[in-house]
Length: 170
Image 1 (cartoon, rainbow, N blue to C red):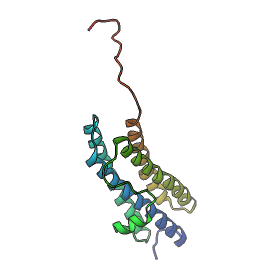
Image 2 (image 1 turned 30 degrees about the horizontal axis):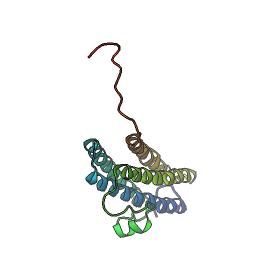
Image 3 (image 1 turned 30 degrees about the vertical axis):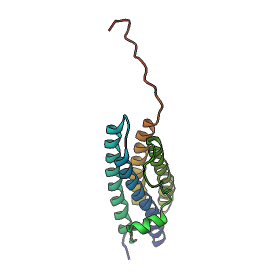
Image 4 (image 1 turned 45 degrees about the vertical axis):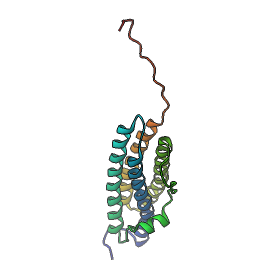
């Protein structure tokens, strides 16, 4: 018996769905590290640092989500083989891809997690599981949206143009 003020049904629903988010988040973390290592091109340095920062933030989410599953009386998915079996994030090809493809892959993984997180947060709230709702909204969703935005901005095609000089000569 877990004296958390939540029904068994609510706790088990949250555990099952949080384990899905946990598996997907572990895969996203791994993708961030892979792409961090494989980054190249004129924005190498900025993206190399950004992807590493995002990977660290995802790793913190992995721990928060796993601890929430355990708090609710479940067993957090942690075995990489189990994670690979249940993740909804598509497996990337082996080797390196072009930079826009790597960034797009990360954005798609974020969207997969965000769709699930929104759905689970709403259902958890309906079931009275405010802790799970708060974790998903305040941590998973807000972090995921911000990280996706940063990645999306790197895919904007903005050609270099000469800036006007207000009529002054150089």
